[in-house]
Image (cartoon, rainbow, N blue to C red):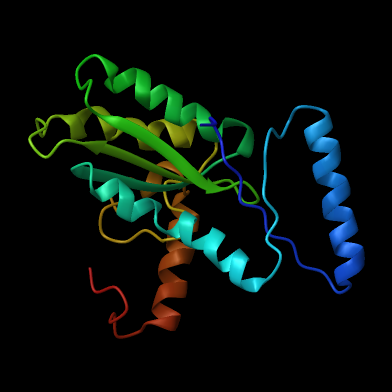
Length: 185
């Protein structure tokens, strides 16, 4: 129904004061046309139900076939630009591919998800990678955000981390995981 949805969670030490500030914010945002509609959870159960909707996004995307997932960080002002640029990049050669972006505005973490029918030509990966990593690097982002480097990003991490930073990261890993059991790859 709407182009964007925002799940906003606040916490404070004075419930009445916090509620009044939230209501003031929403009134201003709706009055300026920034927010068109909304719901405010009345208790922890309702808040939990809203979070469940967010947490089900990856499961819903799996019903569309193959899912290519990227966990990136970048300046918030350009987070959605990558979604639009990837849509444009895939539109002609892979018209059945769909590109989704969701994440954390507070820390610039974008979950870029690209879905394609199961029978899609494997060449789609060559249009996604390394493009997504170079795009992110050019905007001073990181190809590895909240979910870490893992196995799939080891060949791209140098695009967003200096040699000195990579050496420091290895030292920290060695300190906390001297036997290499947490991520044996």
